Each structure stands twice: as structure tokens, then as C-alpha cells.
Image (cartoon, rainbow, N blue to C red; front, side, top):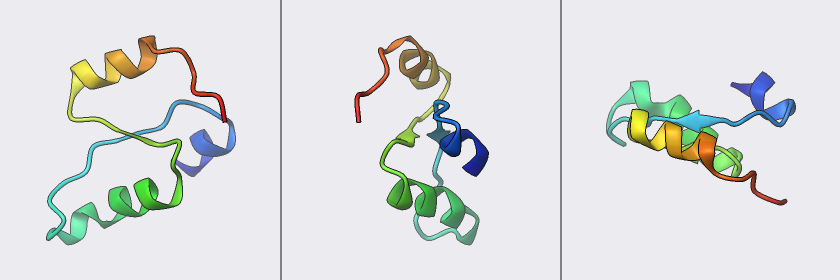
Length: 56
């Protein structure tokens, strides 16, 4: 994921429960990289890819 962020590529995260240790990486990414987008499934991914890029 870090490579995608460094290259300005769309970066999306599907987090799990906050109580699950396996969700830690996704939650850290969302906190550390505001450009990473939270998605819930395929519909959200398609919407993100169709949206114009955010201006930073």
C-alpha cells in the first residue's frame, strides 16, 4: 500500500472491526494517510475510481 500512496495512486482500505488485531494495518493507514479512502465493497471502489481526483 505504501508504494501506491508514494506514487499518488488511488489507495482504498476495507477495515474490519476496531477490536480485531487483524484490522490494525487498515486503521493505521487511514489515520496516517488522509488520501486513503475507506471503502465497504465493490460499489464503493467503482465510485472512487469514477470520481475526479481530489486536489491536495
